[in-house]
Length: 183
Image 1 (cartoon, rainbow, N blue to C red):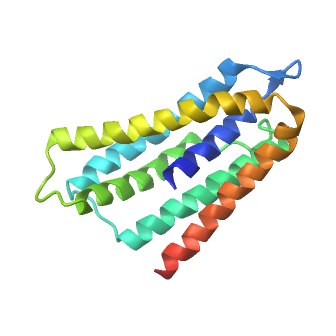
Image 2 (cartoon, rainbow, N blue to C red; image 1 turned 60 degrees about the vertical axis):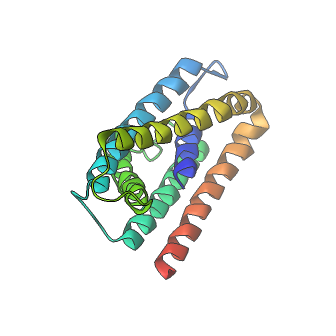
């Protein structure tokens, strides 16, 4: 679900304005880096707070909220790819991305706490876990971005592929949401 959320952010970034028919990679990367950084900051904060048991919410509710955030991010990407990223409904405020990041961090922190660490995890365990999450996140984006950048240059992928992927991410989030509420 975390990677699906990031995919939705990438899709929305790829829907950024074009210049003379060709996107500006700096615009795409700038928007993506800003959005992913806000998301990362937020989930890092609540990962630590929940792993230290300073905050805690019912796991079922957190996991359902994470799934719902994927559905919303996918829907936002669908709006961006169909209406254009300049449309007022196409932009998800960074405050909302930050809020979703807080929820994802609680999910990560709960997973870390459930991994068998007894007592309070050490600073090095928290740092290692968070750096691992961030490394995985960056590796996934670094793997997908060049391929996506190449494909988005084709009219068919921009017209059909990005909206289809957006729809698939949103649908997956809704299915996960239903499953997690039903558990």
